[in-house]
Amino acid sequence: MTAPAGSLTISGAETVASAVTALFVPGDRPERFAKAAAAGAGVVIIDLEDAVAPGAKSAALTAAVEAVAPSDGGAGVRALVRVNPQGSDHYDADITLLLSASRMPGSGLLGIVVPKAEDPAALRQLRSDMPNHLALVPLVESALGVVNAVELARVPGVTRLAFGAIDFALDIDADGGDRFLDHARAQLVLASRAAGIAAPLDSPSTDIKDTIRVTASARLARNFGFGGKLCIHPTQLAPVHGAFAPTEADVEWALSVIGAEGGAAQVDGQMIDRPVTERAKRILQRAGKEQ
Image 1: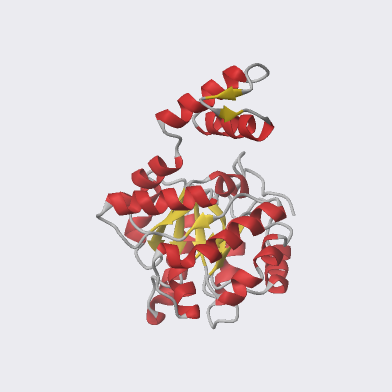
Image 2 (image 1 turned 135 degrees about the horizontal axis):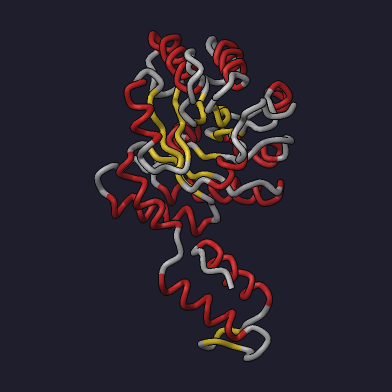
């Protein structure tokens, strides 16, 4: 399927693939949608799942659809929507109305986040029903999801994976601390790389006011090879962006490496070969200082 007439030049999939931060906003709090969109996140996720009580699911879906595809024909809020899990009582209605909204003039729907993603066949079916311009983000939150991560990432049209650490820790009966879930994080990064898709989004930090801990969690994710991080509050956005951006020391090192490329065999005692220079180029690219 092709993007509808009048759609954004940059597709939802492209926007989501490059986002460093993804900010959740509860689907039953429509008064917060515009504020979330203006908060500076790479992408907003309107949440119909965990943030919404069972009795408010239908109202949240209605609010999300009206937000991304207003009935008055105006421009919709640009956002992903996290639907309810595949197989749940609300899933079919979520998908039907959202895909219909995606084809409305002025629709701002960027794509769909699928929670508790485990079944590659179910993802393939969903992807086949979606317009190509929409992003598809499987949220891996269970042992089966991690075991199937490569297959999930290889479903044609999947944009990137995301990690849900809290539900994963519950599923395997582990402590929810970052370091106890290192193996799962590594699996998602490796699966994404093997499948040739964008680096995954890490689970949100549960700290909201403690920006030092938010920064530490984001740096850990960056060092694992994640491409960004989910966020649950606007105060987390700046620390996460900062943690994923190269430091001044990183940039200085990269410049010194590029300056020595093709010349000296080492810089500051470090051998300079192709992997090192390629890493330096990536750092400069992220910093906006390409040579």
